[in-house]
Length: 124
Image (cartoon, rainbow, N blue to C red; front, side):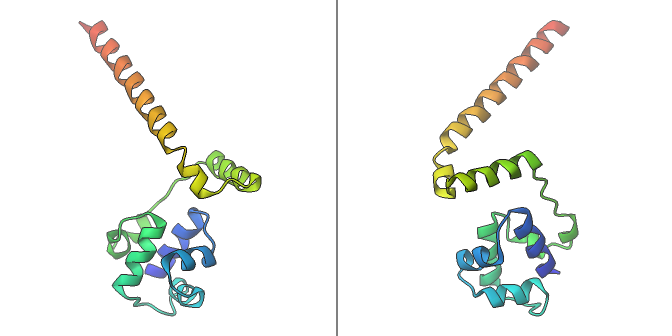
């Protein structure tokens, strides 16, 4: 059911019912009813807003593979985010580090490519 999927993803993302409802611009009680499957047919517009806030594809809610949706979050990352929240660093401030994170990803990819090139050259 769509409500179960929303509930599971919301919990995995570390959002409260209130946070998701506010960001999706729906009432907390309406979201609660959806999650508890009391409202089994929310509008497409509402589902799109929820999916956007949860940063998942809208189609993920509609597929028959809802139970197969698995968001694996490393416990270290969960602890790190909790620590950031405790220090007062908010999500907007975290977004400022996106450039640094992109650089690290690029550097890791580059290192991996260099290693693969070295392995291929050793084989010749």
